[in-house]
Image (cartoon, rainbow, N blue to C red; front, side):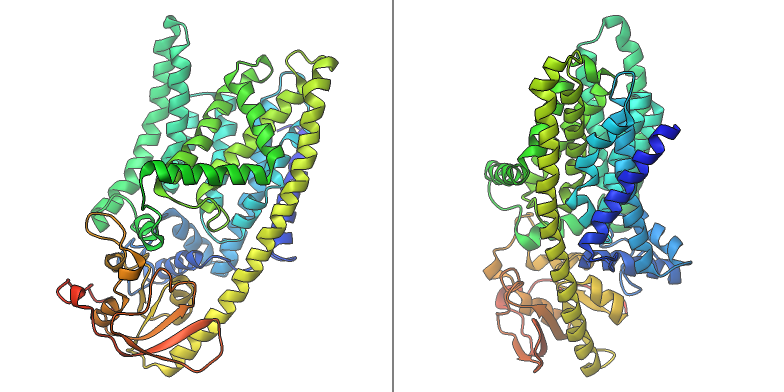
Length: 523
């Protein structure tokens, strides 16, 4: 790293941090998503008991999609407050994403390279409201985004081989879908292999093998651990969430159409970034000599963007869900490709002014207008963050009211389980099934299809688990978990968007009477 690149890197990190602080209204708040508090509770449990579980009352690894993240939090939590540790990780990662994206986009230029041009090209990453919003959610998604930028930088500098393999392996170990980065790189390598000279193919295959060895080991490790402990190769949380919301229903073609429509809407919300992405993809796949040093990296970044759109579209996952956190790797990759599009547009194929007038100046205009459009979207993320914080404050009041009324042995059922795990420190039944895997029986059939909302036997689940109290946000969750089927619920008399009920009687529905009971939570 030379002196001429230090200031642009620092400015990009400051821009990313500034956007995150702006969304948090001048501060980095406690984690905004309820799911993050599952990780924080798991980190506290690991720190205090040595068990990697959602709480002392839950089984090992159940509900923990990314075991590395709570382990990292637990290590930091021995020195600082756990929520502050999550905030520090998120903010630091958000600052480093444009740092490494800058390294790649600088590498993408032919000699002589301009650090300020690379900084301008990195603005789609540094100004990203999606990236900044995910920096303060408290989730591991921001680490995945950082991993994509790191792998891009290493791959552009070192090419295919064990170094880029180690970088991709870290992502595969972080999260199961991290292997998609390695898959995209392998796909690009095979594509390049087909067009290469036959004499070069043995060398390229050897480099591909060097890349795949650490990736395979890293991907097999977490999968094997989950398989040994839980009986499944991945955490139960993806299936539980898909079943809860009914995302996976309908034909694959219908889900793809829905996903394509959502992606189109996302692109139309900022058509300028989308135009630069198309320009970057064309430069990489069209054989532009001006981006030849980084063309292979740009190609797999393009593949990664498209692969996420297809895979998550088939799963029925909404693009905008939770600040687009499931799509964050694709959005990060796409933002880097958009920066590559600006770089190629500004430099042109031959660097001539005539070429710059046709492509470069419109690319610069797209860059400026894209920044303006992104600021507008970031304002929406700021409002959504405010609503989440306000909602958690109401949730906190309702939970503490119930805790004061209930006895120490009374069981409480909830749907957003993260905050209750954090503040109550007692057995809690998770109706969503994230940390109580078999609670998904009310939302998923044995064949994997989701149960229609109106047929979900919440009452039977409450009865079989001897639940005395229920706290739920109405009417939001009534759509997915309707409160009917014989349960008699007494609404507690205090004003709050969250409803707290005492379960006077919860008789299981006739269909559920013969179904096996969910095992008792560990007391």
